[in-house]
Length: 201
Image (tube, rainbow, N blue to C red; front, side, top):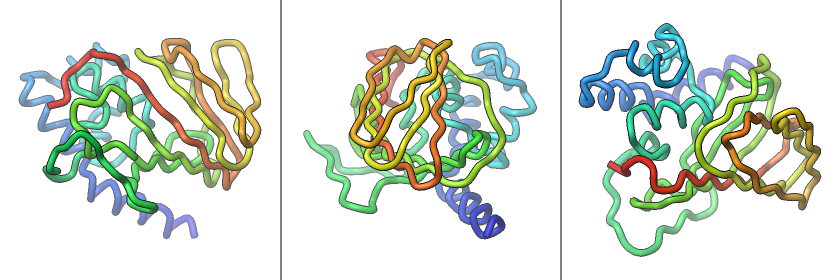
């Protein structure tokens, strides 16, 4: 089962090619891995693994890389040009998946706004499944809103541990270090706001 899950994650990584997009944009900006390392605090070894699609970065890690490269987070989720209009619809099951591996709980993020350029919010449907290695809380620019659609979630926010049950929600300043953990089967709606920083490219 673990091998099947790992293969599925690698297939999605290959399809999205997050690492390739990061490398391409970094080179376009004339930046080295060391430059990105200094701006994000991540090691050049980790950044190299991300660029080679060996490691799937958590959203918080990807967000810091996006800030270092001066783009919106969802720049990395765009797969093909989409005809732009004032609205963008994602039908059931059509969210773009992004897998995260370094958390205590394996988490799948489904981007729900990937086709709308110029947006200031990034909505995700998050599904928790399977335990992995723990990570430290991280902070980044912006604000976040979480709504528990199913299950139960534990949010570490600064020095507080907040329990959210099904139907509960929380809105917080994401500059404060935070991380979310939840049992398998938990589903959360997350809306991330970065403001006007960065471009949409």
